[in-house]
Image 1: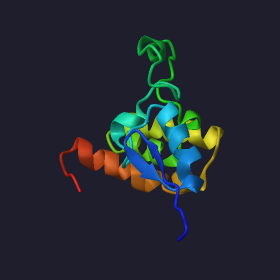
Image 2: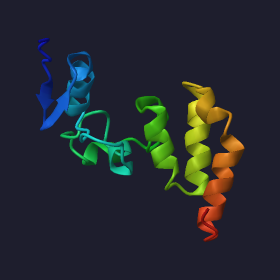
Image 3: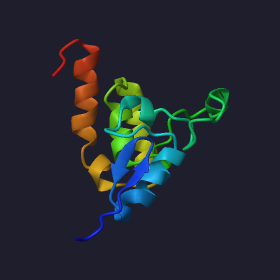
Amino acid sequence: MPEHKMVTIDGVRYRPEDAERARARARAGAQAGALTVADAHLPGSNKDTDPGDQDTDPGGFDPAEHTIIQVMAHLAEADEEETARVLDAEAKGEGRKGLTDRRGELIEEARKRASGGGG
C-alpha cells in the first residue's frame, strides 16, 4: 500500500508538493484559508513588523509589494481617490494587466460604494 506523507502546518494538512508554499504563507503571517482584507493590509510581508512603520511611508498602500489578490482586496474597501492612486502606482510600476485593464470598472465600483449604491 502506498504511503502518503501529508505535512501538517499550523493544524492544516498539505500535500508534500504544496508544503513549501504553505510555509511561505505562514512566514508571511497569512492565516490558512482564504485571503482576507486584513491580509492585504499587512505592512510589508511580515505580520510582526511594527504597524507604525507603515505610517512612515507617505504613499500608503504600495501595490508593487502585494499580489493582485491583495491589491483587489484593498481596492474593495478603498474610496475613489485611493483607488485612482493605487492604480496610478500600479501603472507606473508593475503594470499588471489584471489591474490596469480594469481601471474604469474599479473606479466606478468605488464611486458606487461612496454614494451608497453598493453592488
